Length: 211
Image 1 (tube, rainbow, N blue to C red):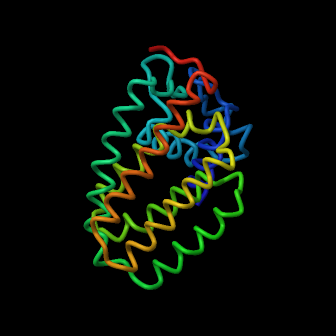
Image 2 (tube, rainbow, N blue to C red):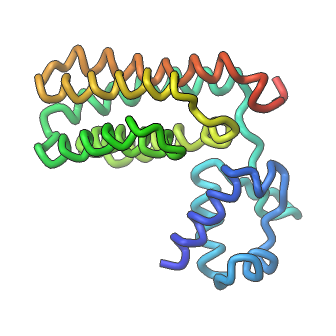
């Protein structure tokens, strides 16, 4: 679908810093830039607005949203821990052998320390969460993750970070195979907290945001 292509291109431009916070996203200009029709671009902008990456302002139209502040990011991570642990809890009994194979595949890919480690991390987790059969809560969880990606994209996880996440992902797979719910809940929470620790350590180096 052209609207999906437009969404993915615009999302990547925003997260990659090509479209900075406060930049206007004018339909005519985007048509020229993306070589995609106005209708699909309009749909893409609506989806970006729902994800929090774009806001619509009176007399200005669609504008790239300002990333969350450091304080707001901490609150987002607190919500993520609560929600994602609940989703994992619900998903435990529904995860299939095919799901476990995919988790192992992503885990293997992440051990190569790819530049898209963060994206693979998200895919890994949503194999689990999607099995909860709570699609609306999954959408909330995805939106919360997306809301901080503009900050996370400023830096690349170094090998030390990747090793820590990879180890935690391995324990998550073990917990699912063993049907150890407490181990799964504990490790999901720890894995999310690890991401917050990295932000706390490197925040000033990543971006200067209003407090």
